[in-house]
Image 1 (tube, rainbow, N blue to C red):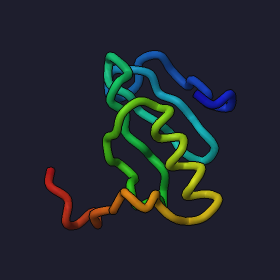
Image 2 (spheres, rainbow, N blue to C red):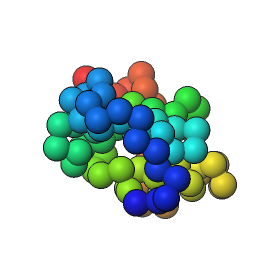
Image 3 (cartoon, rainbow, N blue to C red):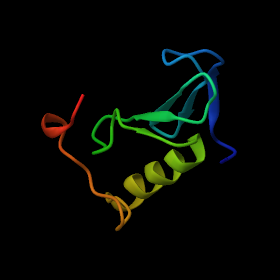
Length: 82
């Protein structure tokens, strides 16, 4: 994980650790294996992924190039299943 991944709290809103990375927050489940990205303006805001290290790469790419990886497509919020 990146050195600038800051632990905000051990037990956050999703039951596990909550981190801050650059302008994003990463909320993890109790085990810390499934985490969600919270970043205003990011097309994947609110989506659950794997571990925090996966999400930090997505944040870096978005902030530096305003894009997602070529293998990943975003679904608009109004079209997502809940």
